[in-house]
Length: 492
Image (tube, rainbow, N blue to C red):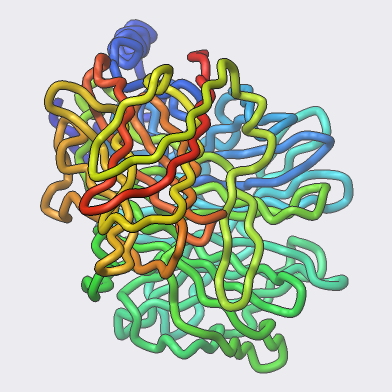
């Protein structure tokens, strides 16, 4: 299909039901539909939006173009859960049909106020010359789940000195004041974050630009998210336009954070350390966090990237969301661990304890398409050791530690149908470790790896054949002790 401008901006109600039914049939014939990750019923999913805990439930919205695996007219789609594991699809939450969001309801966030959930988002519009005009808008969800938009935007104008790339408000409350950080681009085409304040979620004042040490760091900062943990401040954002540097910044666009002192609201200064990537893998972007009723900071990201073609495209759908991760801080680093509720997915359990001596081994019961795997490698003398997943006749996904370089390496060169190879098929990060603990979640077409209790994370889409279900452990040039546990995750 040729995705013309007119086709990308066709509204869902303008499409015949027969076409939707045919698209759904094609999607459901895909061999790579996920089992336990959030994914679109049809079309394209991207940024997680409005992640929140409200009225006793977790609410999560995401960007959705329903008609195919491309970026077109974006809706907000709503899903909810009581346990962060079992999600119920609710349907369209925000439809782009007003003058302030005529060309898409873009990303945003949510906060409870006056007993209702306020959804703050960017309304995308285009004029007759296809020039962009963004608005910051609010919709409100009551306790019955009914959503209504405010009649007009809450921020209608751009501050001077910035381009129309002005989007993705993330809102929080400090004292009696609401604040929002919004991704922006200066007129010199460098990225930054702007700060707004409001007493009531309706009347917003521009406070100015957040002052960081990254004055020329990419050409646009998308999906900012600010929060405080104990005595530290964290700014997460997704900068576009960073050139690769060593083992870093090899994806088309990056996501990461700066950590330091709390934001000084008086002069908007943020004293911080180096920018660090949140995820060392291939497919991670636009994350959003929320604070739940237990005081946990939970993060979910888009398991995908813009402007790439994925093998699922030909089946009429694209992308999914990551599993939810609990964030904590240790020293100058964010740690990310899968939320404990994911244990609800576990079924059949197998365990193994093996010494591997310059060999590759298969262990009885260790195989599958969808599972959770814990593998602890201790007392290594081997120069390299690790695990191969989704192993088939010619396929395997490899995660291993190289003691010579002190690096964890994720290799999807042979993971199945190749894609985005122009950005490489190997990702690496430095890790000084006397032992290696891998906590891995494998779904039909994805792998998420939490290294050494969340010190590093690798996320990747993979597209192997259905019969590539093997698991192998290996050590090269020496030996290592392995203790492993695998739980089957039944398909739903």
